[in-house]
Length: 465
Image (cartoon, rainbow, N blue to C red; front, side, top):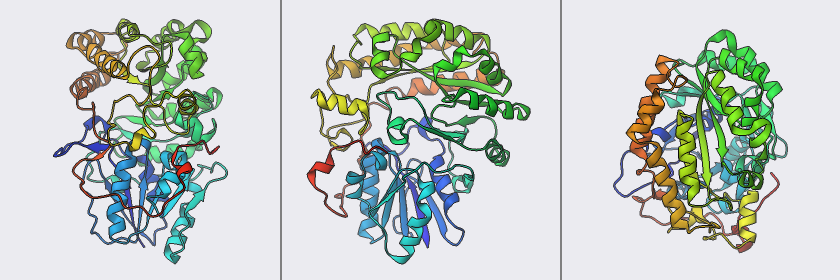
């Protein structure tokens, strides 16, 4: 068969041509799916963010990776192929969170991880017997995962190589879709498998281990870091703050080539952290002790804050910005809380009658950065404006200059140069992200459904996946 893989964009304004540059990273899921496709099939890949999809190019099956923010665009793309009588299969986080909704727009829905079901999907597609759902009952082994990066050729992605060493996280943060889909569990690839993949990557200027939490299991993470040390890779990843209190781990981070980590602080308020199920952020002396340890080992920091929890007030924005400036974070994100379908947060806000849309990700009046719920202490538009103002205040020229002089941020000449490029890019894109439509506004057709489902399934539910 001819199999077409598609990674959809979040959306585009009418007439917009260029997508947000910092979001143009390699879609690792598509490369993994390509590697799982037997060689007798021909694979074509379209990245909707960086190129125009040729709907008229002959194909026998289309596979679309769908996330909550890309749902409308995925349904637009599927409708185009439905006009051409080409079957569509969808997988990804949103397919696992809202399978009944997704099944309206796809002949087949992969619920869970594709490693367990993609071969069967292809066999059934060849026979013309595609099932509506392909459920993964157990988490698959990642022992033989080896993404096929040949599909990335000519796409002009941000020059960072994405690699997955583990998948999932053992924590149970209330707002997190990852723990909802993976049931707060983590699977890991064998270290040699990861090292083999790294050896095949041509551009090794910077590796981004896209693990949901590389330190979910600190003991196992240490073994992985020890295996990395001889290779002198430059890499970044995401970790939870608890590991910052383990100095053996931090020493291994530094020795293995870690250039920086993303850490979810989320809030400076302990009551908010308890509500999030992130009380561990305050362990062993809290942020100040953790930050002192990270600085001791020259680890650059990308810190994320999320606003909108019940103890947040209008002062929370400026307090977080000043804290971030005081500690000279390499970069910082100031985001509003987003209730993703199926998460404990979504269910709680729904029970409290605080959701402002039935399904915000499908509502034509919703756009990126709008607030889809009622905050406790201010109006939705105030929360939205506060996040934008926090970004504006943090990425002033003075702040960029001052943070750039920090001894950790300029420890490496190469990372120091990247610091100014990254901070300038984020500063330039602050307003371009605001109110980006969900779906391509240039697409003027009607969505075409495969099937109808009972109304009770159209609200997101937790399927215990």
